[in-house]
Amino acid sequence: MALHIEKIAKSKISDVDFSKLKFGEIFTDHMFECDYENGKWQTPKIRPYQPIPFDPSAKVFHYGQAVFEGMKAYKDVNDDIWLFRPDQNQQRINKSAERLDMPAFPKEYFFEGLNELLKLDSEWVQKGEGNSLYVRPFVIATENCVSASSSTKYKFMIICAPVQLYYSGEVRVVFADKFSRSANGGVGFAKAAGNYAASFYPTRLAAEKGYQQIVWTDASTHEYLEEAGTMNVFFRVNDTLLTAPTSDRILDGVTRKSLLILAEDEGIKFEVRPITRKEIVEAARKGELKEMFGAGTAAVISIIKGFADGDESFELPEMEDSYAKRLKTRLTGIQQNKLEDKFGWRYKIK
Ligand SMILES: *Cc1c(COP(=O)(O)O)cnc(C)c1O
Image 1 (cartoon, protein in one colour):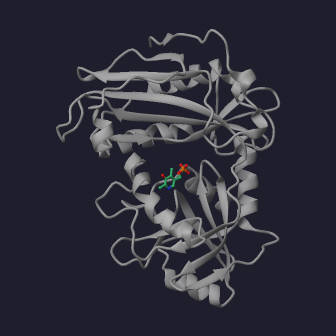
Image 2: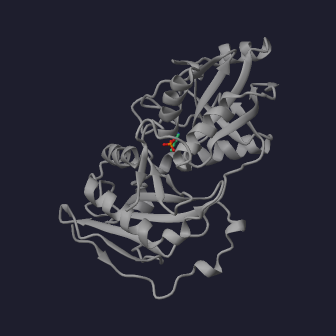
Image 3: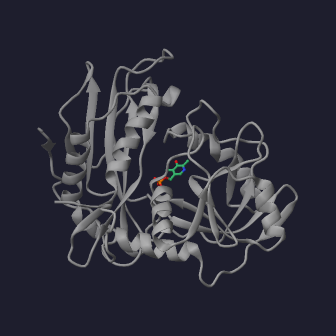
């Protein structure tokens, strides 16, 4: 595969204070880019990270035809760089693209681009606990035309941001009873940019009431608990871990599916089935609800301290031996090449 590489004259890395990073604010020296036109993906290139000019009529600005991915790269004690199950992200961006009527991006371009970019910017992957490089592939519609139909031109890109441990403070959530993130037949399973835009307003209303996130419920009855903010959601009732099955409305998270495999491996009892708000509220009343947490690439596991269901609010207990901590230690240990990779999940940059 031909890949055109233009290197930066001088790295900006010495300007960066890696101890004071805000999530996703600073980007590395290079970016990967590939354009789709005349019915095919053109020669991909890597060039210095920089603004790109767009015509104001580019379709992405008007109709939100855009999908994205998120993954993390870690550097181990030997300076080797590892990604976690990038094949899953590669497949998912094309699944998302298909739903948004966008062309699939070739697998070999995806991996070649990822490899070369991470090699070029390897200094930006910092070692040490909590440090990683957040990798953001995305595709946008670039045809200059405001007619409401699929674009004939697209741009696929990968940009990378050094990040530290994602800590969002104490998280309390509110169960949604009016707004929805997704619906049957909709785009909730896809990482479509607009899903996020649609969640910001309800999330702000929740924040004004002191809740950092929303637990999204099914759009038709609001009786089933489906996702937490931009993460999949898990509950522990007594000793059983619960999470909802993926569907049209629930995103098939790589963290979620990996945690289920690890739970099985750890001998943790779990059930994948629809979860009602009623059973969770009842479990909380009886003191049987032990844990609630979100699962996603950025935070890996985000512990939820409390929740509101209508006018009632509940606090969760402080757990000594929590499933969240146990599973997070195991998962991040594998991601960082500190623990055995029993399932062949790590991918080495070479
Ligand atoms: C990205 C995302 C997740 C988490 O997926 P991971 O692959 O674990 O990062 C969960 N829910 C939604 C809505 C998402 O967009």
